[in-house]
Every structure is written in structure tokens, then in C-alpha cells.
Image (cartoon, rainbow, N blue to C red; front, top):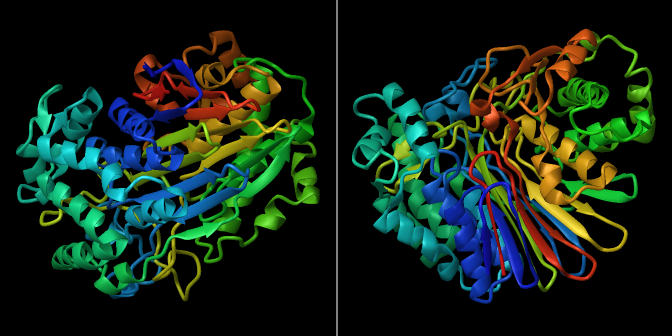
Length: 530
């Protein structure tokens, strides 16, 4: 077996896994070594992430899943949770839901999602797949620099009696010190023994009670009503490949629209740092975001407006004169899901399975609401959304909010396939846009495709306008100057800001069955292979 650090690729025939951190990648690889398939690998790795990457993903959060079966069928799963049915009892019509705290919590969908995935394609016992995560929660795991930094950011903002503060202060917070989550270990055992039903009933009772005591609206009935939803993916051609991603409530459709617009410009291939290419791609981003998001805000039907948004005549009209219009006229303010703190894992095996799980609490440490009895840290998926007025213009009780979460699969005519996911909030679809153009227009190998310097238009958690264009250091100053001349508002970031640009975890399978795993050099991604 081979294991690679961030920024490296691995190759194999038995299986490959790429994840947001090394402990998760190791758990996925162990599942493959034990005879599991790619579905088993991503479940084992994602459970570990719920422990060792707790500020960014957990069983109190949501998950989206993308699967390619050995027959070539592609399936997508929406594992998001709904807003409480008693939302109106706490938040008035048109009022903004707080960013943190008990009212920001939606039903957590992660457990339902991984359970549904295991039922669909898992081959190893569920308990075996959860065992590494239970071990880390019980015995502890080493604090990483990223975890230390996250703790340093959140701790000063927590009330003296907050359960999350007590948990953090009871553990080591220096790099390399031991961090334990014993209550979460007990809840993971409950999930193994009783499945999703036990989580949403027994743990759910404790979670909802804890939130209600602190002024929240989530009830046991909300948790009992939760269901994950399998569906066909949203798919579109780009050149001679087919790109698959998630339908709304995911914003994956923005990737397909950006690609559709860019293809219509019929530009010759230019390298990633070329200002003419960046200008054209950012223009496509502006048009896709400003013309598409208003149709998707708070949609109750996951297929609502998608056919219209990707219709040939609509894309033709939007692409017309796109390069000639002043940049300032292409971008308009839109409300966006804003949580950049996400983690993911993808895997492929020798039998033809490919799978991805991308999951999140939304913002760092989610709602910052920890149910001390179960050890479950809850999401803040409703953060900063408006409560609907007569069901319009906001999130309604029982509605599922928009998600930036999405994974991507690209199918080639010869049967080859590439699958990836990335954290990064609204930047996810921008990163994937660049990866597709790098890999399939530029014909470069996947590790290089995800390693090339990137741009980002609009950054989560930053006060600058949504049309602020950030450039990685690998893009030269003369390119930045040319982009400013073309009307873009440009900022060149330093190496310390590399996490702005996501962190792709990628696997591939060629027509002969050879497998590849690639790990982004940004953040802590890691790939491993058999």
C-alpha cells in the first residue's frame, strides 16, 4: 500500500482513497484492506472526520453523497436536514435567524445519509466501519495545528457555562496533545447498535431537549420525520465528457451553468494564470451566480427551475456578449449560504465502485451548541436566513435550506471516470469549474489539475464585496494588473490564505481499471492506495 501527503498522487489497483486529513484517509484505506469497497471506505473515513475534524463536520451536521456503481449508474443522495416545524414560534415573519445558538440548528442529516449509503452499497458490517472513530473518540487523538487554531478562534467567544467551552477546556489544546470525546463515543456506539432510528429517537430526544432548554425550536418530531433522499444526479455535457453533480438544494447546478457558459465562449485553451482565461471564467461565475441563485432561494422542490436554468436557449442568451459587458454589470448582490468549513472523502475500488461524502456543520463549530449528554455538536445550517413570510422569501418550517455542498463526477467516453469534492463554501463550484477546465481542456493529469494556482470570486466570512477577486500567489503580478485593467477588483493573497481556495480530494479510474488518488496541497488532504 502507498500513502501520500498533501500535494501528491498515489496509484493502485485494489483501491484508492483521498480525504481531508490523514487519519480519515488511513481509516478509509483500512476498510479497503479489510475487504471493503469504496462505499465502506468513505463511510469509515467520514465517521473518523466526525471525531478528529469536529469543528468542520460531525454527526450533528449534514452530508451529500455521490456514487458510481460498477455498472456505471450514478446516484446522488441529499442528506440535508429540515428547519424545525415550530420555527415560527421563536422567529417572526421576515426576521433573521441568528448565526449561532439554538435557533440556528436544523435537523442533522449525517447519520441518516451514511446509513442510507451503507444500505445501498456497503459490504462490511456497519460496526466495523465506525470502530476507528469510536476508538479515536474514546482513547483520544492528537490535536493538529488546524484544530488548535479553530479552538483558539472559538474559545474566547463562548459563554463561561457553555457545554462546548467545558469540553474544550477539559482537553489538551496544544499541538500534539490528546483530545477525547467520550460522550460522542457512546453515541457512535448507539448508532452502531440501533442504526439511524436509534440516533433520531434516543439521541434525538436528548438533543432536542437540550436545544429547547436554551430557547431552540427543534423537537423530537422533527428528528423522527427526517429522511435522506436518493435521486438521479444533475448532469450536463462539457465537450466530450459528462459532468454529474447534485441537484438543488445543493448549489452544484452553478458548476454546470458556469461550464455551459464557458463552453459557449469557444475560447482556445489558456493556462490557469492567463488573465484572459481568468477574466472569462470569472465573468461566467458572475452570470451564473446572479442569474441562477434568485431562482433557487428556498426552493421546496429539489428539481424546481433546473431544466430552465440549464436550457440551451437560456445559456446561449446569457453567454451572448458576456465578454463585452462591463464586469460591474455582470455581478449582482445575492444572499448565499456562507459556511466555508467543510470536509470530504472520496474513494474508488477495483470492482468499479466510486463514492464521495462531503459533509459539514456549516460554520466552524456549527451552532456552537453541544448536547453534553450525547456529545453531539449541532450544525448552524439556518444561520442568517430569513423566516419566510407566508411561505415566501425565506426558509419555511420544514423546508431544507440551500447548501453549497456538492461532489463532482466526470465520465469520459472510454469509460474512465474522475470524482472529487472540496470544502470552500461558495468557492466549491468555482474550484471545480477550474479543475474541469484544467483537466479536460488542458489535458493535464489530475494531481496537476488540482494543484494549479486558483482564483476565488467572493470569499466566505470576509467583509469585502462578493465580486472581490482573490488570486493565489502563483498568479503573477502582471496578470493581476491586467485583470484590474479589465474591471475586476483584485486582491493577491499570501500563502497563509491558501485555505480560501478549497482543498480537493480526488480519485480516478481509467478504462483499464487502474486507480489514482490525488490530494490537494492546500489544507491537510491526504491520499492512499492499495
